Length: 371
Image (tube, rainbow, N blue to C red; front, side, top):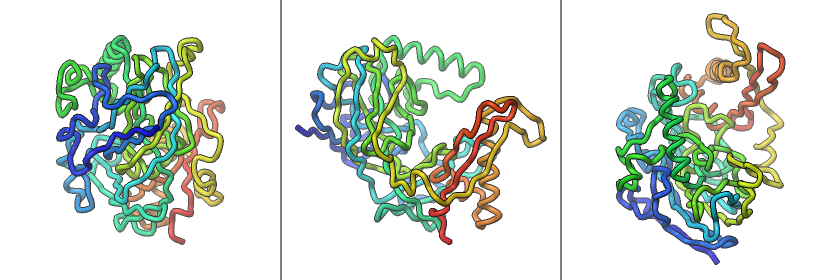
């Protein structure tokens, strides 16, 4: 049996709240009830809920309402799922839209301190690739996946998460605490206590794992009866880092089939998402390119100071060198190069043991560039 949750993509989530939510909370009511083994089709909105379209400009990004991130379709109640179970989410298809976008939003992204200027790339998706006049000479092959897939936290986990993130915020961490602004549902206690969707957590969420294309099975520890599964934030393509904070964002239609491993999460102490697949997550020419250019990064600051075993600093170094390469060798602007790293460059941890200088490599498949 196949079930479906349809949405009206001409309307934003706040105008169609019965179709989904943008906060994680156990009190968000299920929109669909299914049994294990049944197939579910979920139509999803893009990460910014339709605020960016083909006529949007970089100047328009200043007016974005970031409180609406991410509009999710669901929840889906899986009959028989109980706390301590492991929910199997078999990904059958991620069908892409024809329009996508990638944007640099000031104050967001891995290299936010280096890129204070808003910038937008609008993509046309067709024939398995994405192209854009905003990034000429680039053709990005698609490997569609959902950025967000997850289940609801229990009341206990919800409160523990709010507390630990508040403590991190107090130490200067990048945290978005619960806020009722633009929350869907707008009812209490979801609006004021619901978790924002930016980070991944124990129940999945915004994992942004590009290997979760069709053919993968995502395993999620269940914390509430029915699991309450939701999805959104589809990506047509993404580098293994999503460095500027956005991939090729799009609307999509997700088809999944659920299974249950009863009691396995509790029995094995599984408290994080896991996933499995048995064939390439993309065309091997994409997943393991034969032609690529790579830069390497070490934990060295711009002033030459050496830090010890700092992967974040090494990744920053590798990405900035890649951006410099694309600017000087290919003629891109720095913003264009940053976007390209986000949608096509893979960060690899090359080694962790040669202290103090851990090494991160940034790999750019050369086939995305016109020769």
